[in-house]
Length: 76
Image (tube, rainbow, N blue to C red; front, side, top):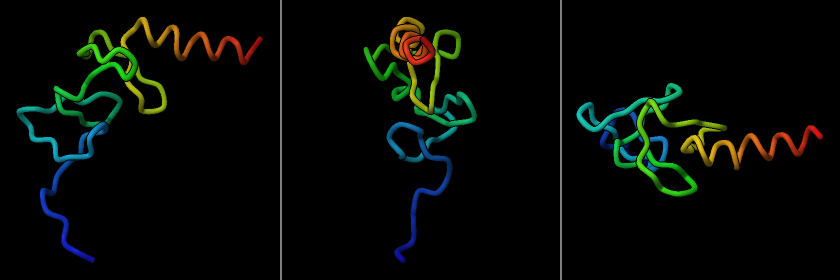
């Protein structure tokens, strides 16, 4: 097995090493600040305006339409 260089925490989106100066952590998962975006609309997120479901990031609007609405359909 080849040695793995660039040790350290890996970004939850791109799987590359996250260094302290570019790190944002949400749900116990490290991300690059530039990777911390809504998976639907690609809007940049902050710790104040993000939502996360099954390790997928969303803005609050798309969390409502993609996760909450779909879960409500399953229950009904």
